[in-house]
Image 1: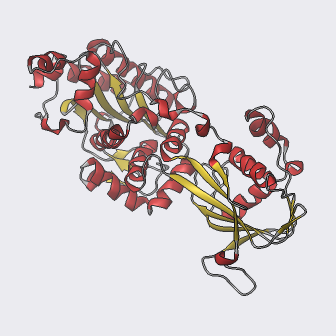
Image 2: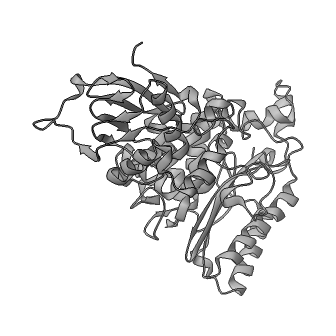
Length: 445
């Protein structure tokens, strides 16, 4: 069976088995959730092993010690080659793969975080006579554009001024700031365009559709934080009048944004929401069916060398993510950047094979890269590379060259398979930051 994978004859084998399939179908057969029957011995494939040996020699010439370089290369269930593949190594932002998997184990890809806006008093002649209360549930991507859209929705209710305070309840984040008091101050400013800074006007408002109104809701009071229990003089939630429900982007879209830009703050917010780094570790290991001993986490972002993951566990987590998404009509390309398509964030200036879906990771002395490459002869090849060394730019160049050499050996897929490309559901007006369709006015209806 190993030869079927290592010589590119899987589609021929499927035909012989009475399953006439195109190259595209062969990819899907190799990557569907039901392929666990194809269990093969973990015997390295010679040609790939030789290429890896040469790659390690080049690193050694530049002063990088071989035994701290982690590599795992796998096609379907067949191991092609590895080096220190089961040893937990500083994974940098590959940690976000674990956070992504733990998030998908907690919520569905279509999950949306809700932020409710309420009032403790009536609205008369454009004046909200009371507090404006924000009840948050941990949306990690509530940013300027989202707040501007909320302000305009509240403006459609006729609100121009609030006599009371802006009250924050729950895990409210804004612009990747997890301090609720500071996040509240940002929201208060955003709701009132005359108080905007030039940065807000030029960088965020101008990125929104032409003709978007500027909210002008002046809040007389300050920002107050409300705990779960009410204190004397405070009105509880049963006395509040719901005005607006704001829904975030979907979890899948949030994870895509987080992974494209490798946003540490978003990763920490999601890790907090699922229960902390140890819950992330447990959920990720369980979903990927790898020993917890191969995953050591102190946070959800990857900041710090104490976050250690084995290359094998990284690949297993990526495959587990794909298997969770595929039955729902989504792909791993809906959550991670795709080379040649997503030309922003961490893929700028990289020369990774086209159509590869990847995640990068960088610390002062760590450069990591993991993902999946569509190939002609080996189907989908899953890989994880974790390098240690002081010349990170050189390590990145070496990773890209290593993957390109491997692709020359295997051949590029003639047509990028749909099992890795972003799905059409990833696009649309609702996926835009500041989309009005995600704000539901509740007051009066």
